[in-house]
Length: 208
Image (cartoon, rainbow, N blue to C red; front, side, top):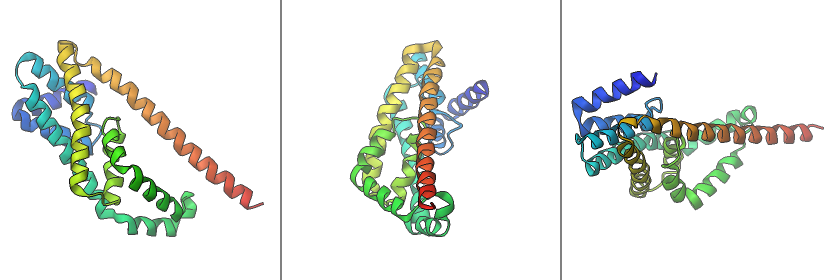
């Protein structure tokens, strides 16, 4: 699978240059099966070979990150808090959710949303998903773009720089980032399991 993705990404970037890089990064933000740990180190390898400029790679990669994040932000804004509350009112009991959970999430995001958008842009998987609650909360668009660009710039610089430094061994970056992804997935599964266990336990106690 990795070989096929590398071939696809390489073909697009070779054909379209920096614009191809922008498109691939934007797609990666919306469609995670196209992973940034392939696209960005590969771009770094192109810098190593002298085919690309490091500053321009960072510029177009960060623009791509912002474009992809804006697409997910738009989905969150389109779906809207009212629709989310309607679903929770209608089906919340089946999902072990309460409308108060939305209130708590909204309070948390109002307090920590800016920091979350910035920091989560440097966390695999979550870096894309954080745009949806930002859209749901209707975070000021200018603020969202600035925070997304700043966090993405750091993430992009790290992966492009790693690909540049490793040269012909740039694919080693994918192995390191994959470990981080597995840790994030494991943490997410654990948190979801704890949430449902808490709600099921509370419901069982309430039914006695």
